Image (cartoon, rainbow, N blue to C red):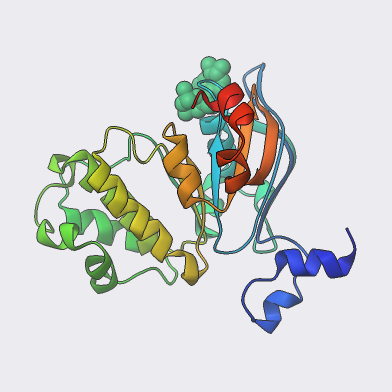
Length: 256
Ligand SMILES: Nc1ncnc2c1ncn2[C@@H]1O[C@H](COP(=O)(O)OP(=O)(O)OP(=O)(O)O)[C@@H](O)[C@H]1O
Ligand SMILES: [Mg+2]
């Protein structure tokens, strides 16, 4: 790609500083990862612009969770090859702790709400990390349900409220890249809509999101881009609309 084309690919809005950037805001290059000797993530590459939402899709066992975990630099799976860049920082050289400090927050399927702590304590504990995360006021404004339940123990919230709390905890930190593993699992459509609204509202703040979802149609309607994984490799990368409009692709990899 010519440097001019690359720049227009990368640029969003009219921020002059962004026009000078040549690397996508978030980029994974030929990433390989293993559980012991089990070779799972087999050369995955992704490019996402600042503020975009990427839907990471694929059948059960395709390697979606493993890909998110590798990006977040967890010990398992272990990354043995490749590069991960976020906002011009080499994440592949970091520990999971350093990656979190660099702005990567993974919300796993089980949501990791801390037992014995109220909603507000769960959020303020997340805020202990240095950086410019959202204030409690900002969080409560965007999540009125959490404001109403601020003194309730976090683990007693409904599934949807727990998902909101998990996202709120990520926002309380210095968040640049939000990794969501099946956020809609087990949630009623009305709660899914509320979460969609929040994910949409953080885009203009430059927060970039990767969403893994079984509910592929919902994820694709929300997302700008889509990547479909098949046995640890990228089977398709393009716009979310291309997947929605392509019955063969949907049928082959997503069973929808
Ligand atoms: N801790 C682990 N040790 C060994 N193999 C694992 C481990 N976790 C996952 N795997 C294997 O890695 C492969 C990819 O799993 P992964 O959980 O990443 O898939 P997924 O796309 O998230 O699937 P699902 O849609 O079911 O959540 C699977 O074959 C799985 O059995
Ligand atoms: Mg998974």
